[in-house]
Length: 303
Image (cartoon, rainbow, N blue to C red; front, top):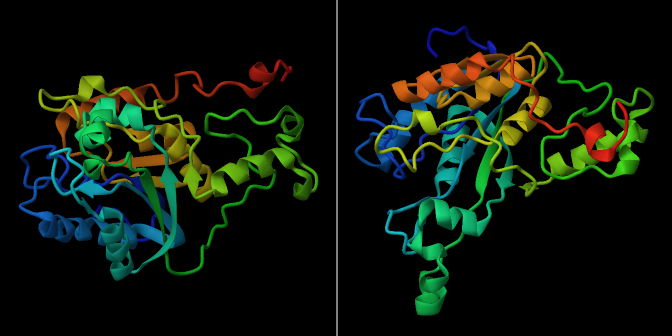
């Protein structure tokens, strides 16, 4: 990031290594490989300061995170307020905290993936004081101070919906409406989904291929950010042709979606196995068919 020009990035989207949850590598450059939580935050602050420098005035940085357990015992132990610490760090650096979106997760799916004892029904039977919660993921939104020099305009409203719901049939005819946008019922319907602070319509399994990126001890580590979340960020907070940065690229999800949406994706990844998978995923970004189902096919209408 220090090699990139100041105020050259229009949007950043990323998931920082979840402090204390996993150690992704033994590299001293790896934020997850810290001696303690305070050292992690000190290390992470260098990243946030660089993102602040790179971000255009008035533009956004979107951080995907979650509450982090103080231990991996799975017994419903206390949580660390990781999102709160991220907010305070960004405000200290100069960002303004703009919004928090909650990404709902189905409890049984979380239980089966993590084998967390606190989510097991047996815990209810034995001692519900040890019960836990399938915590939502959070998308924290930060705005750099200043006036945005390039408005993010949608002259014909929102054209694509990234989510699992089916838009009502009577609003589909307004897709791409060029008249008075007050009448654009299709765009209004999408905006109601996106403007909600609780995103319970994210397709949790709509992620990039990642199994080949796992090292021997990575079974729980690789969990790419859902493409629906990224696509919403790109639509709401960037224009076509603009630069989108992710400093923790993983298997390439943010850059992949940026390229698919006609943006310029910039990504960096420390771990070789993740980087190799990202290269494979990005090579297919411009050739794969759109994985979004056609609304016209769903409703039986002809495009």
